[in-house]
Length: 336
Image (spheres, helix red, strand yellow):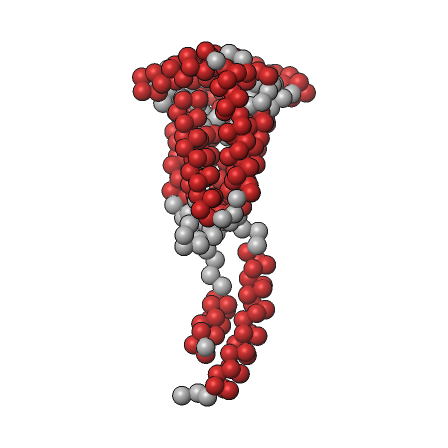
């Protein structure tokens, strides 16, 4: 049995060996998106959405009749029915509704950014997820995924759904887990798989289907971009059916690579991540008009920024072992 003096000396020596490697490990992994940082990023997006909700248009019937009501078109009854009821309620007293809704979004955002204690963070996270799911169903018509007339470039599967998924992935845990939930990989496959399936539908594989995606972006973009986007949409509408099908097939292939590649490791995953980021940026500029934030009628920043955040969160779910640090830590524990 070692003496107390020997044990103390070994303990100090092991601690000195661990310290530099631990510091290096923290430096190498400091860029990773922790659950706390993911909640803060979501909070910033919630604050942006709440600020957009304070625009004068949102206090009029236009919010219900022009933004929400179209989400019921082509939807099954269990989606269209509740959306129509929601439209009736909001359009009756739009100002009262918005004075309740906008501060709620702002409060959720501020809470996600500022609250660090697990219990308080869980409360605000629960409210945020419930609110996001309600918006996805009643305000976005479940992202239009059941209508067969939408695509990822047009906002599917819905910004609010991504708020909810990322909110659960960033849920504060009692175990002290720091990284976003590992099941986020399965959610990644489901989201991008859904995007690929929607892009393969006949409505999106025709010249007019592709042109509509660009035309929608031109209606929401600043003037400097709207004109070239509209010109591009007109040229796309003149493509042959075969050429349009080829473009749509390429989009489906890219989204399938993103969906499956995100589950891999190494170079394959890196390719998927690059494609995902490029797709998010391109669609935000060309098809989503930066979320329409310059129109005075935007309710959020659209799905593209959330897809980009989703990509960073996916990368952060991977735990890279540090062999040397682990070996020395084990040696430290045995010595102690």
